[in-house]
Length: 188
Image (cartoon, rainbow, N blue to C red; front, side):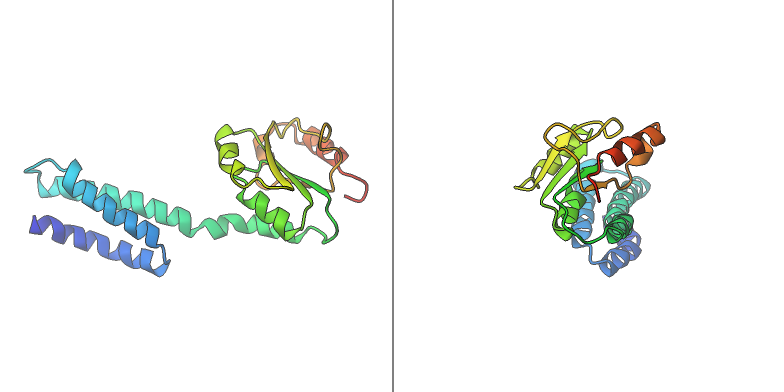
């Protein structure tokens, strides 16, 4: 057992330094838990050092992927912030975020731009379920197909149509953009 822990300590050294440099305490905690699970539950009694190392490597890879996913969240969000910086600061009564996902960035846009009534639309029920917790007066979410969306119903013309990393999911960009453009209020 001492040999297995020594191999694990060597394998963890670089990863822990990397995680520590990013202040990703949750990822480090996950690694510790993953390692304990590997040694206590997934490793059969009398397993070889190679088997233990293989399972430990799987825990390392899983944890590294999780750490990188969190570490690069800011880089993935940067185009969104760049897009918001292009929006002229003026009164925005109504806005729509097409392809709102979990609603995190929709909420941030509504706050940063002081949008009075923001509607986030997405076709994924699981994303909308996560977004629902962000709903509040002036911020709501609904299911829908962004490719066929146009203003109407309870959300007439809008001052802002926001679509960050979603247009590529729909066909007929020319038709889609024409509908979105037609949904803008005068001056929007």
